Image (tube, rainbow, N blue to C red):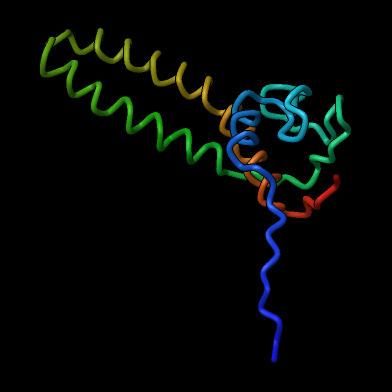
Length: 129
């Protein structure tokens, strides 16, 4: 008879996601995980957690498009139907809003994806403590 015991060694997910969204280390919550706008550090400068295993790839971009699109499309419809602004005014406001929201969300979603991978021990993240 085989042993079917499953050992869960996952780390706490929600605290890690909050830390990652804040662009902080998912382990200690103090050190920055990004060295520039989207460049991931190899290790946390505070707790020395190895972050080189993270593979965010296109995930942050897809999530950013999904969130921004689902927020801005209904707002665009509501603004057009309720207020009927000039097309150039409508375009300018929503273009600036879309770009600003995208630039705000992209590094935060990258941090959240890295934190998710860390919490679920994905891509080489191992139990270190």
